[in-house]
Image (cartoon, rainbow, N blue to C red; front, side, top):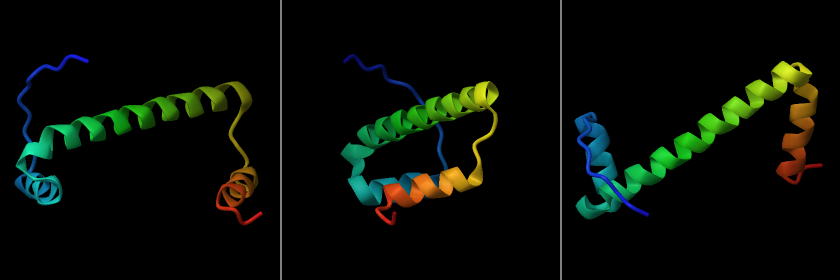
Length: 74
């Protein structure tokens, strides 16, 4: 996998908190992982939107039932 250097600006408190967790050398890897996670979430949102356009909105009861199953409560 290739990489490219870029310049980004983030709030100082965000950078300080990340560095406290991963150290100065782990910053790029942390941000890469965060960006990948956000891309996955964006794609899931797009899939949900598409599914609702095709099938209509999901019933809240169905969501609650599936969530209970995933939590091992059903």
